[in-house]
Length: 301
Image (cartoon, rainbow, N blue to C red; front, side, top):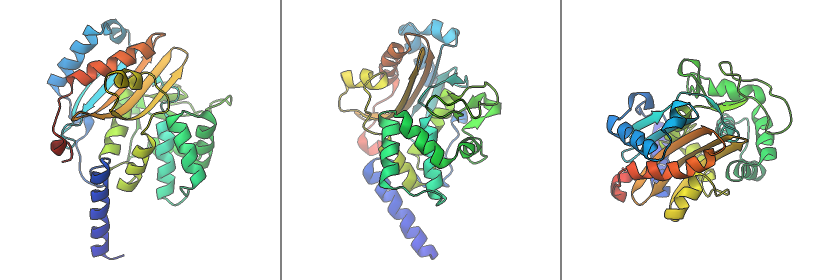
């Protein structure tokens, strides 16, 4: 394929991404690192909201980790967080890593996005199907997934930053095949690395613009109404939520890109407490209050 054809296809993918309201940048474009994008005003507002919600003690006890990315200007994200490099058991939330690995394998032409695979991906993400997750994990390769997460290109698991996304066990009764090196967790995450996942997805840099668009589509239309979804839909039923959550015993996690009424942001929360689900239901509304409203035209830029 010649250079002119490549330029045409790149322009076409970008136009499609804007039209569908999903990925808005081409792979390879330089974007800010979230670690370099901390915003003191957003941090103060987040800390105040957490205090107002009675969650300060949970934060001090490291029972709650939160990461927030304001995407009002996607190329200039504003980031705030608490305990966001603390790795916690995250139950089904790391199924987003299986989704990512599947699309990376598709990009490598080692897998084909067949109707059956797409149905499993939708069931795994929207309805948190454990059998579907294990089937896709085995298609991807148990040895492959964490090599990809630790790769220099993505670094979704980074020992220097406390860990990150990890899938070291099938979603079923089988034992773990590889726990994470630092914390020995089978299904784990840090809030910051999950926020990076969604930011790269939104910017079209997770595998490719086309793959990012498809993954975001699969993350839409949540099939389980609790935590972030329950909190938001009670007040903003028109909100668009691209999301994956997780629950096991006292571990409650949720993660999403949220878009409504001129707002766009990433929110991730990981909790280890019997009340964690209720915390997250309240937390998302508190975060929503501190995200500025921008015009639709501004958000599309």
